[in-house]
Length: 164
Image 1 (cartoon, rainbow, N blue to C red):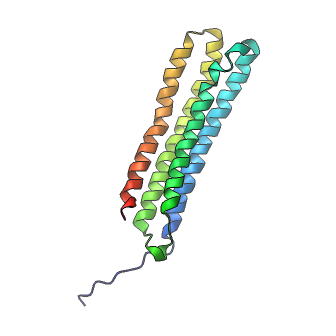
Image 2: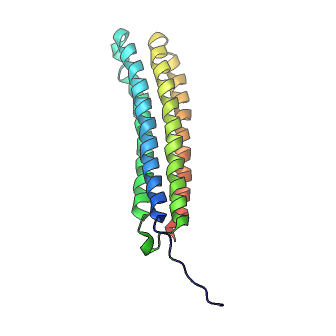
Image 3: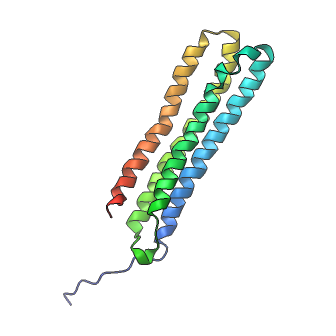
């Protein structure tokens, strides 16, 4: 029997791709929500004494929102590639898409936590010592870039299946 038999991908192959899409969006949105909420609490506490600093100290909330955008971009890219198993969506593609979604989602979750904690303490500290503001921004940038690393890896993984 020298025939090479081509096997159809299992019918559950797209499940893993869909889980990648869900992971990208859910985890990055969780991180962004936590960062927004935690920073927002700090802004509310700070603004009682120094209301003129509200707009200046809104930066952590904006940075937390960007984390959700990373997840949204990857989720939309991955969702565009998902197809039924009958149309050739195999386990390899599903696993790579799951990996891409988890990459951006979990790194976004971690970045959102970091942004929230730094944003909360940073805006409260800035109200007492304005020179702390630049240091807070630098730390927030380092926290934000964690989510960006996940986005880069997710897009790299996404390109592994775009030619398939």
